Every structure is written in structure tokens, then in C-alpha cells.
Image 1: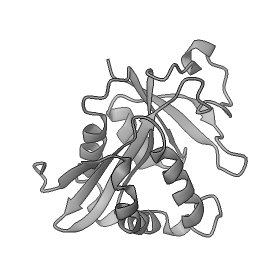
Image 2: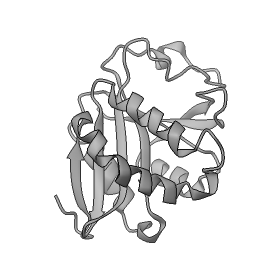
Image 3: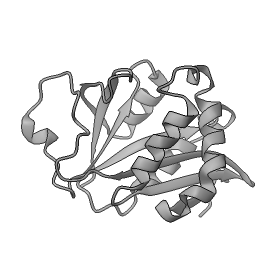
Length: 182
């Protein structure tokens, strides 16, 4: 599929992950260049997380290409019943909001676009492609509070903030956001 801006989008599942490893890591390394010295954001730890995501039911990956160059991607998976996604939530919310049954929520783990290709609608295209025809009732994601551009984009796409969340002992605190898919 090619969108009106010329972005070519390809979708994949976990079976293609190993052959996509290096281009995925290359995009990640450029996008997170200023954070790679932090072990949490380092390439080995990131790839461990990607492999864990890919082992989950419902894993999906939307890749964006300008010509032959991968310029961004979005990925996620269906949160399993009893998921630990909400562990580390710092704000009080209705416990029902955090109940996962294996079909309720699609967790977006990454949406990233190389800087030279930002503010052209590519992140939205990747987002929409990843969420197209999902059977889950909602999508969830984590975003750094100081990522003002991403925060503004998500809000304009219908996402709302649920609260602060620290998913790992060595991770930063993120804003947990929700998008109703119904």
C-alpha cells in the first residue's frame, strides 16, 4: 500500500521479525540516538523487548518506506488475560479499566519515524495501518511525558491519558494512553 504522501507501507507478523532485525534496529538507533547510553534504551535491551512482543498473540508490525529506505514503523500485540501492562500505574483509576481478558486491548509498543520524515503524516499512516481491522475494543500505549509532539499527535487522533505508569524498575515514567476502537 502507498499513501498519498508516497509512503509505502508493508505489514508483517512475528514470522518476519528476524529478517527485519537490522533495519528495525537502525531506525530505532537513529530515533533514540540521544538515549542509547541508558541501558534501558540500549539496543540489546530494546531487541529483547521486541522479541518478547513478537512472542505474543496478535503481534503486528507496520513498516513505512520512502523508496527502499525504512523510515519508520509501528508495532504492538494483543494484551493477554491478566496482562502485567498496567503494573506500575501511579494514578488511581477504576480497577475495571485495567482488567485484561485477552481480547480487550491492543498494546502499541512503538510508533517511530526518522526525523527527516516527521510532520508529514507518516506516523498517522503507520498508526492507522497497525490498528486497521483490529478485533480489540481499545488500544493502549505508553509515551514519555516530555515528548510533546507525540502527545499532541495522539490527542488529536483521539487518545486520552489514563495516568502515569512505570513499567519496569529501570524505566522512566510514561503517560499511559487509551484509544477506544469501537
